[in-house]
Length: 348
Image (tube, rainbow, N blue to C red):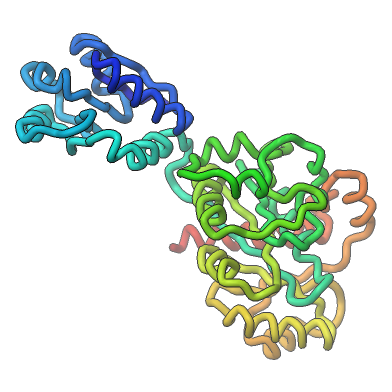
């Protein structure tokens, strides 16, 4: 990414702009005169032109381009708007009143991928159905294609970091994220999380009884989608407004179902609890009732079936994660789901 350019010789204004850039995790180029500004004018993704040099730049008439904003400290005189129009600026920004908007704008520049990654939710149709394990398997397979993250949305679950073997890795957890305010860039979140290779994990500290804070969830999901090709959410079965909001943000919600009479009965109730959103699909784990019978009982299509995987507990205990082989039951099922989502995205 080419750095944004700040054009000003006003030290007070520059100090404030540099403070906001630091908050956004951005290092700008600084031009203290118009000659230096012209050299980077066309290449910078964003130009913040100080009010002190706006008239001089307008006289030079630089090439028209998007992403130019005139920035002033304190009150804005009427003539500054005419100057901004002459220099081709999109608007006049007054600090400190607009510092939040400016931080968000600078933060967005730090995201490597402007488009949003796919978001997959995974929930158990009954206790012990294997939702956390399958969420982690999806994350492992997605990470073979590009940056991926598994987000633990169930504070009472086993912990996706433990299942993936990264519980001892340094990095942000929900506990710290819920204490932050302001906008996160996708790159900043990606670099802050514990990760193994291309797979990042957002979970809870071991033993902590955390709760999902709606503001933190919204910011984390937004930043995760901007910073990763795939976002996998391990969802709780408990009814919570914040969980309903998370589900509404998913491209696909996968419910793990054990195809037994008891397992299907519990899944049917869980489907009703979620309101059976249009993006809900079932994944069957183990042997038992036929897929068509499970689909008929729940009213939800079955997207994948898999047998139990041998050595699963051992692999997790060794810190290897659930995927031991792409050809194993988990690997094949996760790959099939990811391929289906890719096709859905291309069709859309």
